[in-house]
Image 1 (cartoon, one colour):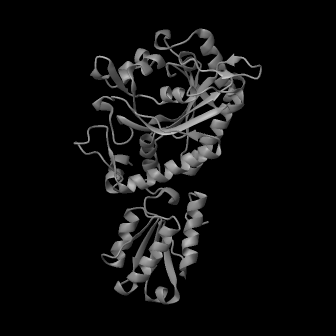
Image 2: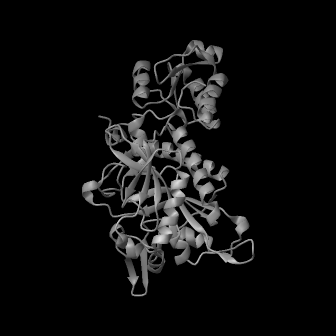
Image 3: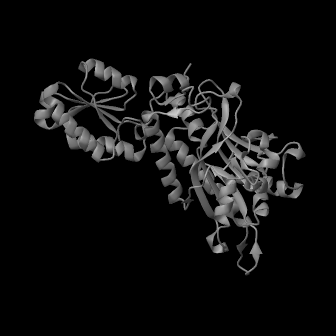
Length: 403
């Protein structure tokens, strides 16, 4: 069975060192390179969709999380309050939404600014029990692709539809195959904030957004502040989990007294839409490692090109080709040690998409011979043409190795 923990170790993607702590894996250079590529893609996708990105601190005053409702409704899933003094208490945040509410209310807002889309790839922390921790799938320090979209009530339907389109685009680029949609509704009333009218309104808005899509309803799976659409995935072992999510929140705008000047000059309350296109980087990569068996699409492969000179005489030309690849934005390694066969096998074990071989004949002709990860070998081609071919595949974010 494919296990991301085993592949993570073999491919040197992440390392769960005991001194780091259970549920706190260290991302090694190869894993960090793949993660960085995905993060940059998601940020650019959001930027093109009108999102503004912020940085907010992983700590907040106790009063912030009392105001947000987390300490009242979510305390069992939070680390203990950090007490510096009797009057100075901080919380290691379990969510980013309280800070994004502060971003919204940092100045007055007009209806002309809405929807206001605030995005961040930020850290949040939850004291998961040791028994449920595993690799990247369940961790205690979470890097969440998060955003909060502040809308006028009449904009919610269109905004949720636009978010669903962004989720589809991100999933297609990453090779994520969702298994279905779940409308997560509230269960026992004592676990949730707000009144029946607020919940009914939010649930109906999400049902309308899901019209025409196959989905199931799940009572008791809502966030404490509102219902949500969960996009489900299934790993190769058949385990289902939530990756992407869209949540409606009428409660926090009330708690934080958020408002905007409406078209009549009065004050109106926005709706807060919580959303994540790809969930946390940890859970996302636990899934991607397994579903691709470590052979990521070329655009986020840790090393995209392994450059192999046949002998010492070709090292200078091989290094020049590697530098050209790096200058073009590709991730390329020069590999000189060992026989050619052993180096080709090592590249295959590392799931490198392209192996560029330079022998005396190729160097004399200014060419390179490309071998693809799937075993195909291409006729020798000019070095600029080989670099351009790889660059074209990477830039297109295609799952294929040839344009």
